[in-house]
Image 1: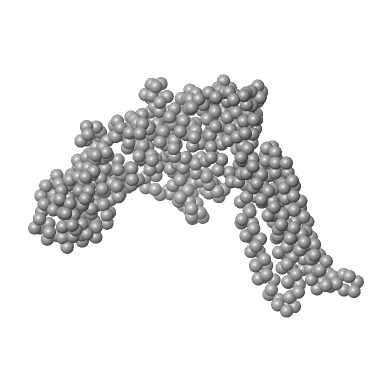
Image 2: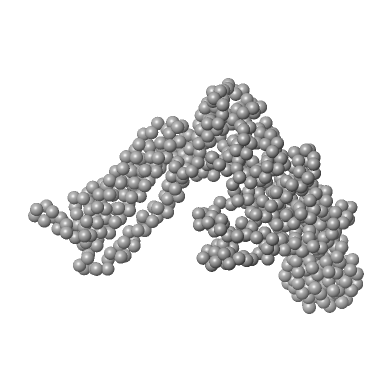
Amino acid sequence: MDYDDAIRNLPIYKAAITDNWDTVEHIFDIHPNKLDAKITYWWETPLHIAIGTNTSHQFVNKIIERIVDTDVQKLRTKSWWGNTALHYAAKVGNTIDAKLLVAKDPDIAQIVNRDGHTALKLAAKYGRLETLWYLLEVTKDEPGEDGTSPYTGVSGGDLITLTLTASFCDVALYLVKRYPDLVTQKDREGQTALQVLATKPHVFPSGSPLWFYQQLVYTWIPVNIEKASDNRLESFVSKFIMLVAPCTKDIYNMKLKHVQTLKLVERMCSVVIEKGSHAIAWDVLETAVSTAVKNGIYELIKVCVETYPDIVWYEDGGLYLFLSAIRYRQEKVFNLVYQMTGHKVFAATVNPNGDNPLHIAGRLSPLPRLKTVSGAALQMQRELQWFKEVEKHVEPLYKDALNNDHKTPRRVFTEEHKDLLEEGETWMKDTSSSSTVVGALVVTMAFAAAFTVPGGNNSSGLPLFLENGTFLLFIVSDAIALFASTTSVLMFLAILTSRYAEEDFFYALPKRMMIALVSLFLSLAATMIAFSATLAILLQNEISWIAAPVTLFASVPVTLFAMLQFPLLVELVYSTYGPSIFKEKMYGQ
């Protein structure tokens, strides 16, 4: 190619990207060879450029008609990387022009580029769902230029793993039903479809956390997977829920994806078992379970273990499934496997470095799992919860057993969590120090206000507004502010003078912090009420409407404090007094 042609053919390039056929039609009348000329550095033709815009549909229609009139094979002209115009349509999701191309040349869908990708595979790679569905209809299960079918071997493995990478579980389910052998095929990275699915927590219920009201909608909204193709809510119940909860559509789509994913996993596992080969079952299910345990996808593990119970004995870096759940701090997997197997699968298992299950629980969590809890203090609490939970299940001799480094589990825990303990102590002290100053200020103001009541006192020393109902509100609010702020200061001081032992982070320190924060909030709210009551008393005869705006503005600092501190308080309460992360019953749910 003469690269100067890129300059000479610049008008054609501009017309292709702006959908302006009329300006260059005469050029093609004079020079028909330019219909499939390579007009860019990457050997792209005008058809490549126009289809790649996904907007120049008129230009594409006109140039396809011209090409077909001369030589339909020119529709297959490739760019430098071996991509046809259909490859470009698949990349950008241009279904309209993809249909034009296939209508003129049905076999163009079988062509592969230099990477061995068909247009179908590129649609999956770039996440173009509509185009992917269309190309699935027109791409035949026949050998292409590379001698293999797009649905078999490495090509088939690529197709389904790329589909799952794009989280198109409905497409993957369709593929598995139509081409079951795809389940055991590996892509060019050596991964199976089930293994790739195990890296997608968000397509499973456990990886899609919902607020309380969202969970209610999720639970009650019906999903019919057979009618899901039109993506509509069919039943009266669905329509009613949609009316009262606008977010229903998103939740419906989420639940639909979850249902499709679970059906897909069940179907894949069934196909594996139908092969009747232990080697295949072990290879496919082991890699999937190994990946799923790292991501906490207990639903996938549950189906795999139900399908082939021996998979609990897969070994990953010297750790069996149960021990991996402890190592990666996946409590849902921990609960599931412990209950499903009906026996302590870790009892006879020791890590290569001599660690028993309690040693493993004593080691610091992987950073991604540690960060699921905010704040070093709560992270330390969660680590202690894990250690104590595993300690309840291990044999007594394990509690003081030595590993290859001659360390007990408790010593391993102490050494591994030394830095986290210091960070938790620093966070607790910094929070308490700052809050103590605020509490002390409130104590001072509340104490002084009790002796300088609004309006002053009469000759007998009694407040002048003693009979006023608003004055009673003032005095009660001031008393609450004094008592609550004093309590918060005392609790913050108790935190500051704590010994900060490991066990303190399990219950004592979080409890003190909760009491201190609640007391501080009450003291601030009571102070604002007392201040508002004072203004209302003093100005009630002059400005009668003062109560409403004063109350409104007084609520601002209280609301801000609640918004900023409430999430921390909720997390403290839930982590300390909420339901345990280790469920007594989970299997069969």
